[in-house]
Image (tube, rainbow, N blue to C red; front, top):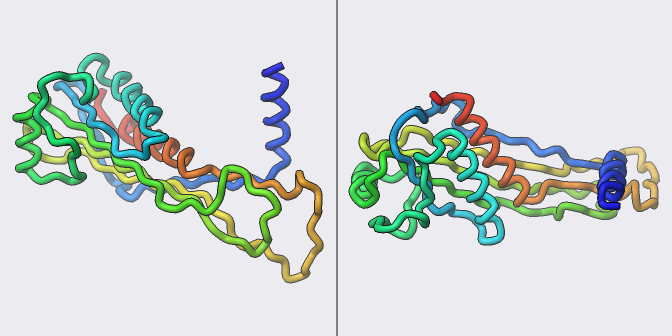
Length: 208
């Protein structure tokens, strides 16, 4: 029964208006990292409360895939002397303090943000002249605590949008429900997609 329902939803979605998301890398020439050495520490993600757990799980899964047991989550390690929140792009002094307070070699900082949310995942009977977008961004930074410098920084922005489709011919629209359903990636889905894009970028460019 469940399989039949999923198939019905999939087939229905083929006939609906869908807005495909686009992902933009704001640091396209960023180089990768060397995963072959050192102890790595993942900081608590700066993320909305309703998405933090899943984004944290996704992040740990990625880094454990590449580092196995050499990566730890900050809340799973006892005795660390670190401030509650580490700002993005910290200076050398802050990175030296992180080294002294954690004893780790590399530190991972991830920040996510909902930039704009004009549409829900499903919109009904939208006007042809209506415009708007959903947008979310993810920043991933990795610091070498021994060298006290940033070795990777990437900002990925995910966007799905609607542009005006009003016809100069004033063609009469269908009043059927199936013809007036539009699907959008909400900001949460865009956030997950942007994070996965950032991880794919790291993996493609890094030494493993």
